[in-house]
Structure formats: structure tokens, C-alpha cells
Image (cartoon, rainbow, N blue to C red; front, top):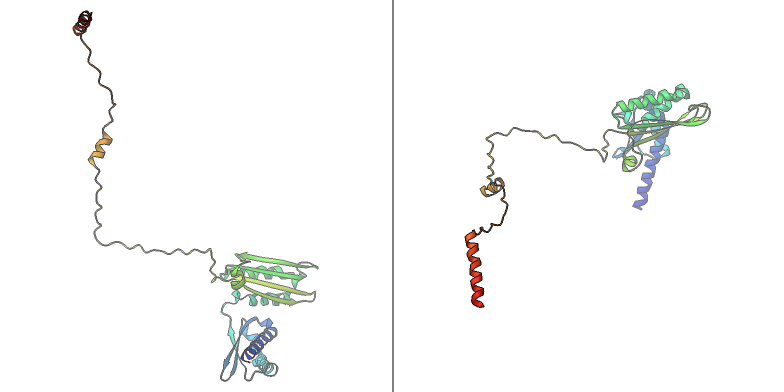
Length: 260
């Protein structure tokens, strides 16, 4: 039973969110929060144009509270408005702004609207942005699409799925409907290939620098290197004198005579 009530509550919150976005699409709303309080439900609507949401003397808010009570069975809904701090990083606000410009000036000025809004987003500090405008009248009678892109944009991976801001909007014209798709990479996204370099403070060393120990070379190795190696030569036998040769010859003859 508790699980079913929880599911019903979440479904009701989702329907409230979709209804508010459909009613306040031109006011640049893309986010709503529902908080439970002891007095009732507190609904916060984030928008880049709070004047359009409030209306004259708060007429739009009064009408919203009546519909939320009757259609969605909310006891005491309290509507508050929260401003978007950086509307140029809000994809839905950018798409709605382009759609309102197309409805005012027509499809002939789609290039000036696309390039102008793209340059504003990049100048605000975004890493990358992409705007696609497609439909009849862009740029001719047949339905075509036109792409405006600048900076770096991820199209796959976790960053493209969870961190890139995406939004769509529609401009209803006499010639037909024109769709607007906006992708924005905000500057707070840290890419996986981004490298941070830390600066190290070089502080001067106070005190005397220790003397490095001198490396002493061995005398033996030094002497061996300095002295050239001598060639090994065999000592020659001393030459015999002529007298000794004669005497040796006579001795041989005497030996033969004795043996004979």
C-alpha cells in the first residue's frame, strides 16, 4: 500500500510539472520544484521572465492555484517564483527566446537570430553550444534544417548524456511549425582530458648550504690510466763469440775420436 501511494504521489508531481511548463512555455520556464510543508504544497517555478509568469496584478498565479486545487487535488498550493541566475546557460530559456523571435520577425531572420544567440552564449563563457533550427521556411519553401555551432561539444559518453544541457521549443508560424533544439556545455563541466597544473612557491632557503663531499679518485686507477701499456717482447738470447764457437767445434771432434 505504501508503494502505491508513493507512485501516485510522484505521478501527480510529474503531471503538475508538465502542466505548468505547457502553460508558461513562452515565459522561459524549464524547472519546477514541489516541496511539502505543514501549510500545504510549495511550488517553486524557475523562469528567466518572472513578469510574464506573474501577469497583471498576479492574475496568472491566481489562475494556476485554482487549476491545481481542482484538477490535481492539491489542498493549499503556494506558488513562488525563482529567477534563473544565468539565463544564457539555460538551454530552455535560449530555445524559447529564439522561438519568440521567429514568431515576431518570421523565418526570414532565422540566421541573425541563430548566430546572435550563439555568440551571446559563447561570450558568456560556455565551452560549446549548438543550435539547430528546422522547418518550413528555413531557408526556402521546403522543410530544411540549419545548424549553428561554436566551441567544443560532446556528442557521446557520460558527459553528453548527463552534463550537456538540452532543450527543445516550437515556433508556430503561418507557413508551418519550426522546431528549435539547443545544446550547451557550461563552463563548470570538467572534461576527462583536462589537466590542472599546480604552481609551486619557490621559497629561498635560509642558512648555509652544506658542502658537498669531494669525490677522491683512487691513485691506482689514475696511474693506470695515465701510464701507457708496454708491449711484451721476448728477451733475445746473447750472441756467442767466435772463439767459443771454435772451441765447441773442437770438443765435438775429440768426442768422436774417443768413441771411435
